[in-house]
Length: 362
Image (cartoon, rainbow, N blue to C red; front, top):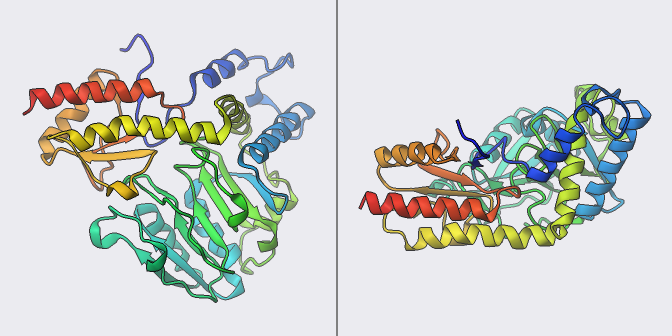
């Protein structure tokens, strides 16, 4: 057993900021003198509604969400959005375009095929998703109801370094693994969605930010709970929302603002990632998987080239408190997920161990 907190490089659920955990712990039994835990509050109560409104306002402020867009606090994870998006948006033309740059964008595309004419506008599968297609590579249809892409590919360690230009076609982005890591011009997007368990809050909450002009086009068989229009009209409370996770998101947003907001987070995340990528570029044992221009600031994938060494590395690292470095089962190798809450010291500790491991296994 470890006597202190470990450095958890999990792809999600992931690390949360220690000050957030400490505050949540101090308020667990008695929130704000109410004599009850947030976990026990009615979602219709005055006390919880105050938490809800504060969290919503903090999200709008932190992400600079324009009045044209509405944030929603839903459930079901990004997987639910794979269905919810086409059900609500594809109705305008019956068509949608998808960029497939990793596992989850591929799964989203396959799910969408149940609801209309789905076109693969670009794919990086030809080189094992090690790169991001450029704007000129995108084969876009002007009559598509929307264009969907995943802005950060957790499994393959790539990240879009630009926002695609789609003309009048609404832009839909899965930002599950890089939301709140840097500033984003929300006005450019028709819809943004993200599972909370990487940069926002514990698992169980899904955040959706939708341009309200896209409401009301759902397919006739769309379930009530999967209608964005219903959810907007009910202010995310058509049923009981994920109350405790909404509270936790509020604490995380306050912490982010204390770090200099999204501009401050972007600068710090770049510094953190540089520690690891610089070492990978000079190492003779470890090799980064993604092309340099496509490297993710959130998920760093690397290999030794020897599966047995990869396994030994992950096992020995875990024994030293550097956990969850084993790559996704579909690709193998290693993956260091370094979301907002991972401190720079965690990267420095990881690189120090990697140097030690490399010396021992020359």
